[in-house]
Image 1 (cartoon, rainbow, N blue to C red):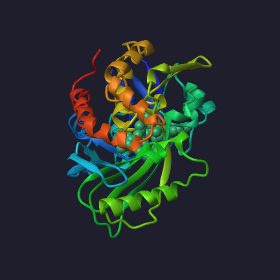
Image 2 (image 1 turned 90 degrees about the horizontal axis):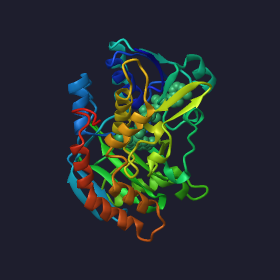
Image 3 (image 1 turned 90 degrees about the vertical axis):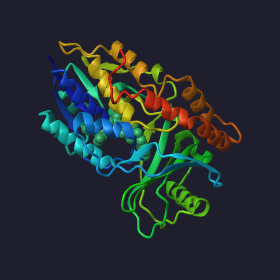
Image 4 (image 1 turned 45 degrees about the horizontal axis):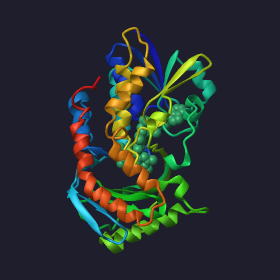
Length: 363
Ligand SMILES: Cc1cc2nc3c(=O)[nH]c(=O)nc-3n(C[C@H](O)[C@H](O)[C@H](O)COP(=O)(O)OP(=O)(O)OC[C@H]3O[C@@H](n4cnc5c(N)ncnc54)[C@H](O)[C@@H]3O)c2cc1C
């Protein structure tokens, strides 16, 4: 049995804490704050059920919606039955942290971001870095993401007044920022609206506010959704490497081995940017790679990640599509639209087939 320090208490850090504790180890987790992370917050139905069945976590704010509409800014679109629920990051983090406390896992809400020096004071010989896209991740894991692998994203999340819209989720592909915009519906006029794209594709002096407002106009004019203007937005960054495996999973610094999970390793899907479930799964893989004495075998961990995070990486189709979307091809919007139209069902079927959240890790 061993003791572990985990820095970062959102999905991936929390998952690592839970699974390591299940294996009999002792964990102390440090998190800056409980917050509503700027995020689309879409998770699969299966993951929602898994959290409830396996851990008793009930997400009351999660909403499925009827259809998912995938479209272009000109209004061309396809619809499929909604494959996911839109939840809120605040509820997800709050309930998961509560679960840790019920399991007697030590949780420290620090009220500030820990510095690398402060981390050294609380570090265990193998310390888990679950700090997502942040300065600390960069310092501890020596990750320097290529700008083409980083998405900059802004979103509004809250109640809207005077809105009129069907009970559908929307994803609108937009070439201008090599990315897409979304509108996810919640209960009682709760909407999550965002837009983001590849950092290097953004022109100099780009205004996210103007771009977000333009997205609202597209929703109004081409998709007949009535929403007021001037919604406040918040931004964040997300690493989306196409080839995740060229980066190392750990880094030794002053005799401490720092091991990444979740966004700190860039685990989100390279096209969709979905990183909640891969983040969770990476925490699980980490615990599976830990032996009884409490040593994390990082080679085994990397192997488990490759094998299990099917929805985000190893598949040739995803790598091909992600590379095409990052290219400078003409008619990229159209290409992306047809690719999503053709492959969305396949992507969703793959996610369901590798239903790791219900069963076990494939060794
Ligand atoms: C705008 C946007 C939309 C997205 N939409 C979706 C979506 O719809 N579906 C989906 O599945 N994924 C989505 N993602 C991706 C998803 O948010 C991430 O992949 C996921 O949150 C990764 O979880 P994590 O625990 O690894 O990192 P994070 O969620 O980033 O958590 C890191 C935690 O570490 C803490 N921390 C950081 N630095 C310090 C420090 N120095 N000291 C103490 N604590 C620290 C932070 O407070 C934070 O809580 C989106 C991301 C963005 C930016």
